[in-house]
Length: 361
Image 1: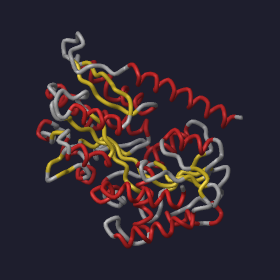
Image 2: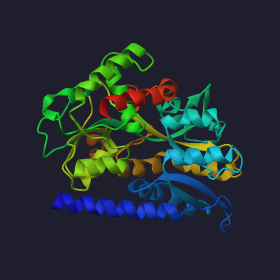
Image 3: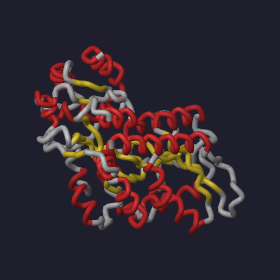
Image 4: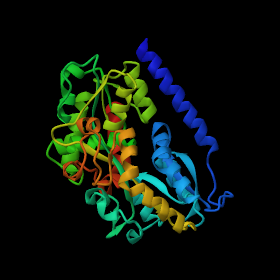
């Protein structure tokens, strides 16, 4: 009963933030504030709550500049930037995870960062910065990075997996959730599987080998969640005991009282980076760079990271003992990540998803 009540509370909270998303769209025009206004995107739910507390509230108080938050996700924001075509963009600062960056830069929808205007730039993880460097130009200011590993039900699994290939353990058969490749967690897991088998996404033979292995799970996968809400539902209602997912999400569920554990695979977790980007055509560059100074500062990134259970982009942060004990983070960790090769994955996504469908469809 307690597990169901917690799930109901989380569902209600999600609904409240979804409602907020539909009304709090803001405007890039002035708001009556002496400092003007900017429009910034944020992921809905507890993420946006922490974002407001750590960044928006102190920024507005210190500068008098209003921050209008637009809640949602990458795909919708990318679509709206494409519709704007680099002119009068609907946002002044946009959050993207790694899979959206190449498409946005290729469409001339983002402008390179003027890193000289960001005092904390040299404090940011170079490994994370490089994930959004295109043609030698830095486009993204890294905020946080999650690690894709194994989320599992502690009341159902007594011996959790220690590496990616453990998904083939017969003990888990019938209780596994796997996301399609079109959901970033699904592509990240597939990349991890390819690497754990000794290959890379750029090697067609290695990709073939991974699909051959995936076919062994044809009758073992009980759920195919294609978004965060579906993952939570599958785990909460017992459809799945094991799912490739992010450390921050898993630990947030555990903190909420759910029987959830998380393990970092021995052969390497997968980096799931969120950075902030300046859309082409914004007319509020001065205010945007003032906000970027807050987004990149250790003093503001620390409370956000600790609230969301994700490692921050700023390398100079001293975290709480509790955070250090639960979350792997820092430059040495980020260098060991299996980063998805989106230059290869993006043009092959539709074809690979069709192969995935042939196995699990």
